[in-house]
Image (cartoon, rainbow, N blue to C red; front, side):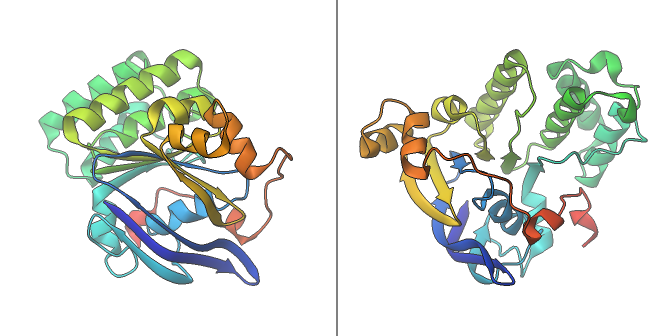
Length: 261
């Protein structure tokens, strides 16, 4: 479903992603982990047509994001770290507009919107303006919107950041069921190591722009002679606290306007 070969991204002299190669199978739940500034978000942006690679090759659902961006965009959904809702619309209107963009039939669209807003406990706030919502409520709405058209691939960049444990568990229960029943491929990043260990079939760890390890959580634990994925992660990336980078990657703010390209 996703093939990446010798992928590199440079911003001037800074190498954000350095010659990485990996693949994600159809129907796989794949975790992409790494410290702050390791290259996770830059990689996702290249997979989702928001950045062009400096070198290397990417194929997403059989298409090249550079050569056939529209075809690639139609095959996936992404929930960004940064909020991408329209604050001047209601929760329902944000969902409705998204469904129209993806050509979800009207009757199915209405049913799914109700189902998903109920799922994230926002049905009673469907007519509320997004600008009046808290950060946590906006996050839940973004997740619901991202699931509306049942995409072939779902990219989730820190999807559960700021969510309470109950909502996190509920979200993953839904996603795993979607993965099981529809074969949806899930590619996610997280700083919750127990979440990655519990959910992902395979994990890739990127550090300083390079993939330093990849495999099932148990394989990484065996490789590092540790008892948890968190311990394996620390063994592979070190225990020093990382600062967020101030490179050009920070200037590439995600907006839900990729469809206008």
